[in-house]
Length: 154
Image (cartoon, rainbow, N blue to C red; front, top):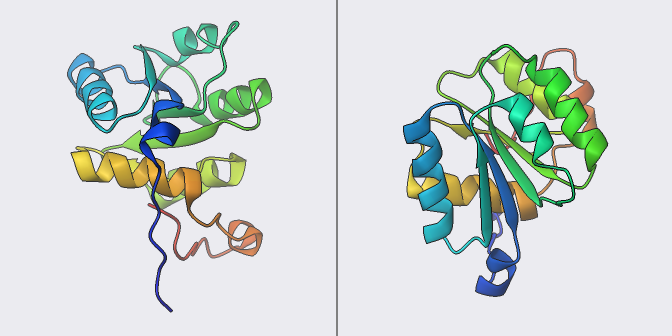
């Protein structure tokens, strides 16, 4: 079966409002610059998960790309809070060494893919495009006991 190409027009890209949550200043700036170069509209960033929650006051984000490594804020709880604020947001966790369990747990909560660090121009673009327009992960895969999730945009 041939995989279909996933694209976003320049107008679609420009209409996106992306929140980047990344404690590392170099990674945060790199991701912000990459997203801008890819033509995505508004990019807002935050150095912490707690501070990121305040960014939702009076603003709607289409996407949130967030550092998924364990911090002083539990990731599953944080992602649940974000999705309670706006269930339509496309959440993309990012991590250098993600474990299968961590990725799986975030996908079950509602994440729409995964971005592995260090990221490249192409990996950022593919992560955002697949999370936005790619096929969602089948519910049966998310409920499976063996945690084999097939094609999960990771």
